Image (cartoon, rainbow, N blue to C red; front, side, top):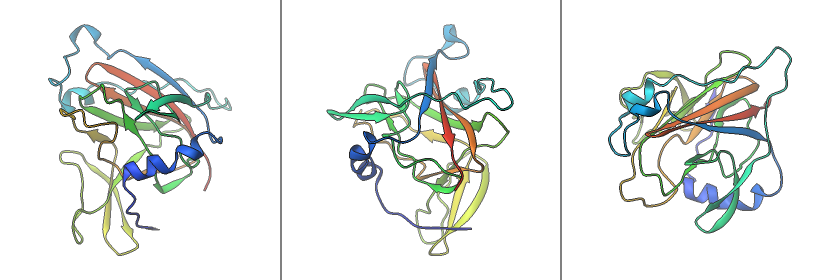
Length: 218
């Protein structure tokens, strides 16, 4: 499978989607819950990715034939603008972009509340099957894969210029000690292997948030 190269920066994508956000699209359900062991959660700046990986995915039960439990996207403030996205924060799945479809080239905008400067670990799994969401990273040089260190490679794809794009089953979002804003670097593309209902879980140093999204056929 060949995927098309894109050089659009995350910040440009988010700005360009502002107008589209208010005009419809899919829907989601979100819930924020404390970490698995609230009494032992560490203050911002002291956790690491290995600790975040110990948290189990909190997948809502979905009966056979049951509809995907989605709700309308929520409005939030992004750099002074009212934007429609998914999630209650600090991690937000959006601003709301194009409909999610099966494939490896989904440009899935995301942002982090500037008030949260800590690490984030993002994973995703289908509720009505066992398919995993994987996160794609473009090469940093000519033919050099840009994979996250310490994370197994789930698959690779070739871009339109013949370079290897690496997909991994988690997105590790580094801490932002400078609190520079809502845009952090990571996962230019998200891959959804099949149509269905997916849970996207974001684990922060003192919270866990689950967002439910519906992915359509290509």
